[in-house]
Image 1 (cartoon, rainbow, N blue to C red):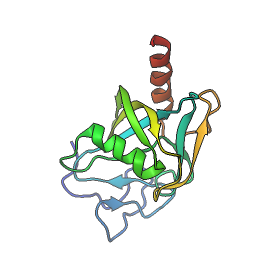
Image 2 (image 1 turned 180 degrees about the horizontal axis):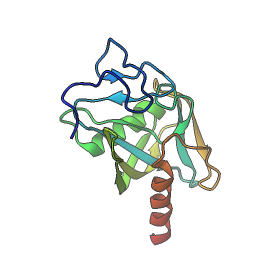
Image 3 (image 1 turned 180 degrees about the vertical axis):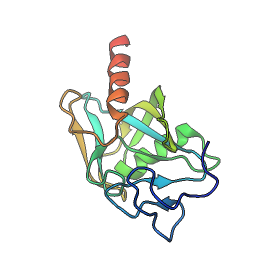
Image 4 (image 1 turned 90 degrees about the vertical axis):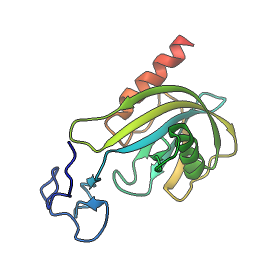
Length: 166
């Protein structure tokens, strides 16, 4: 059950939360923990191009700044999850994507984010870094750089399984 008010100290590293801000953030930028009043829903897409390469973004914000990730972000209040996934791809990479399949829903005990992952196909545009990305890149599925989040390996396993079933 989420706490009604933010704790004074980070449950991950023990450092105090920054005094200003909502949502509450750990004062240690390297930790990156963020407390939300309610669970937050994130949506992301494993986007592949016509050559079968995977589109990734290098994050320009915490958590995991500088690491490679699938285009993703939070679902706005009242927004359809699929629409949020398509919007986040457009905002972060400048391309249009068609969602093909749901890959899975990922959550972890103690975490406030529920992540919904989709497989998608790049249908228009040339990849370019948006405001939330340092850079974008297209990678062979068997030559991905280290990915930012713990569940990313599971997401790629689901994506690979989907390709085998097709």
